[in-house]
Image (cartoon, rainbow, N blue to C red; front, side):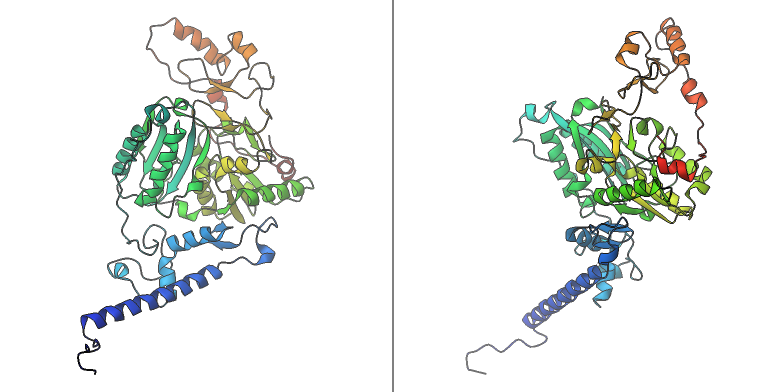
Length: 480
């Protein structure tokens, strides 16, 4: 050693320990990056079979989901397979795993499956509200705005807290709409100015609870505003979409294979081509309510005549033979009903495969406004429908002229929707059926405030759960 020079740090010195730890971290990080790349590589789809419909869009498949772009599969692997990557890298259990997170088998999406850097425990809910001091009141409350539609399935350990934050956030931004919160996630449709909805999306994406799960493309937007809803309703429920079955029994984690709008378009194109020749083994299933599919649907679809999504499980049970050995292509408004609906259909183990339209009709129409979906898209707000093409596929309930603009039945005791054209409406034909029309006259002559139980031809004549008698040829030509 040269006189006056400090001795090199020994193995036990603080400096030596720090350098050793740093080198170890670099080595582990390099091993993890390599394992991550190999894991993603292992999920690649062979070029010959990249799309069920014969396209080239899908490049990776994992956990029954399809991915076209690298950031998508990277985000999925980081979120759902962090433990698998760690084990493949030979890193052993991380401190968080030693504290009680699963160490064997694929990490479940709601526990250890968190991106590197996130603890296994459920992230705390942030109470942050956006700074609106730079925004004028007029801009924040402008009637020229949009309506957002979104959902996010994730583990929520404190739904009440999330509900309270959502209510405060929406009030802060002068948003109206409906938000459902449950232990399985959140489902919302809110309206406001474009400034307000933009701030809402930003805050939602920065919420730790939704980080790396919810992304920008999960928000569907359409022209509208706060005026599209009568008020703001935020509440805690057992399910974020009311199917009527405990999420622990039928989980969104068992959902069908997601198809992008491009893939779904190709699948429908192939289905319609085969169906005209009577060769199709596919069912194109609309899992919305009858009044939704009545004014707009995909060509050649099977649209169940049900009033509520909670009837869908019973519909499947009563028509299992219809789905036996079939490939099922499912769709709904924004995708959320297909998450649980496809899981329920798969639980019956009768279909060959179940696919669903990712992002729903909303996302499909963004890319194919004049595609295979014809008519209007029903929405659950005061607009009732939005359009992307000029087709009208429904008719006035009274005279039969083409008409697709819903109104509420004029009878006070009824909440049914009715299609009545201006001509018939001017004649006083504004109820959903003759029974309601008569009751309306009786109610108006009674004391105000008196209500009657809903009972009319619309509800009495419609079976709660219809049993389909559909031949293969009928499915081929479509059931409109």
